[in-house]
Length: 139
Image (cartoon, rainbow, N blue to C red; front, top):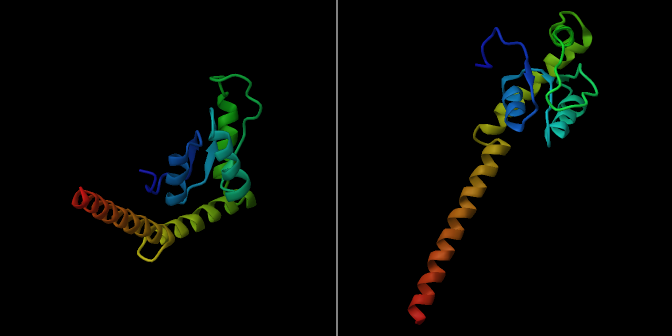
């Protein structure tokens, strides 16, 4: 759904899966963390990846409402045509999407690491099978 051309951004609670989905779709996001590690993930999106907008600040209580004017302001900032900051976010999000796709294809870092993990698990299974066989033979 995020790959649909009508989607230009996402309001995200900054859960890790949501961030990965936005990155792979090449979308900037409006951040709205609620609890736990989501606040750290928000820092990653805003300060490191630079593909996010944070328009609400200092919400004191869990579940505190965000006014529609505040949301509209964040959406306008994210969608602003010709605005340097918005254009930079969209460009960076697209670059990250290209990198994410390279990582999962054969030879990419994610693919290589997954294959290494599978090979290691297979070798452990083989080692365990041989070890059990050796113990049974000795008994």
